[in-house]
Image (cartoon, rainbow, N blue to C red):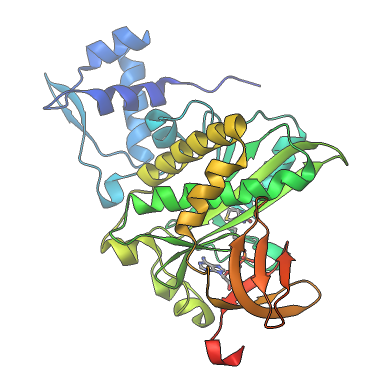
Amino acid sequence: MKEKDSSPVEIIRRLNAAPPPGFVSGESLSRTLSISRTAVWKQIKGLKKMGFAIESVPSKGYRLEAKTGSADPFNAVSLTAGLASETIGKKIFFYDSLDSTNTRAFELGRSGEPEGAVVIAETQTSGKGRLGRIWESPAGVNLYASIIIRPNLAPYEAQGITLLAAVTASEAIAAFVPSSPVVKWPNDVLIGSRKVAGILTEMDTEPERINFIVVGIGVNVNMTKNLLPDSLKAVATSLRDSAGGEVSRTEFALSLFYSFEKWYKIYLTEGLPPVLGAWKGLFASEGKPVRVTGLNDTIEGICMGVDSTGALLVRRASGGVEKVLAGDVEMVRRKSL
Ligand code: BT5
């Protein structure tokens, strides 16, 4: 396979790093990248086509205009050029459209793509939620990302990764909105009581050992309600709703990768307790009456938090405490218990 040309990323990196007033001369780009002036000019033309707003001023050179709205492209070049993480996002597979980024990441995981590879799509035609549900994935406004990781874990330990992803997504979201996000067990991130992000963790495993995990994260970034079906308009929200204006998807995705890498390193060195501690700090249902719909039954009771593996604990009216491994939680009114 032909190696990808790294010059577009290198040019954006240099323009991003240029001190005020932000100009970098064509001559300096040509010299530092060891490409001809004509090649620089062609690359700049290509980058403009990708959506980068680059100003060219004779005798001064090239400058990136302020990143706002349409001048803030979201693609593999903008992401790679801004990457602050070492492993997560080092390899980015970016698509205009996919059925599901998780499905593609799974194929890539099976063909040996390394830990940290990320699949992103501008839209998903069959975005997946849990248990066969649909993740609405309108084009060009949100983040649909799947991260491949290869931790040395037993299958039963994978629940921890879902909690880790929820902590990560919440941390990244918190940096872009004024209100603090909360988590709903096991995998939703909410602003107020509305869902802003969902996580779908899938794994390729043998009985004793996980081969790889695909962590699918869907975040509503700049989506407006008119892009959602009526049934979700009152229960979903986006960063834009909360921030009161557009959020850079590139900046957000980079911050998500950075947080993910940070928490993943903590998890690999210290285990689940610190992740669980952070997750508990975001969990708003403890001590509250809940109804949990599992695969086979529904139970109601008081939420007692989670145990050391991340399983949900619910105390029934009879006093017995149930441990729930999978299901959906909703808050209920106390008098119905
Ligand atoms: C989830 O499932 O919340 C997991 C969502 C994971 C999506 C990501 S996107 C990247 C990667 N590739 C994929 O194909 N999937 C992952 P669950 O807990 O089952 O919630 C699904 C429910 O959330 C739906 O039944 C709707 O009620 C609601 N929903 C669907 N789309 C939504 C959206 N964009 N925003 C908020 N809520 C949504």
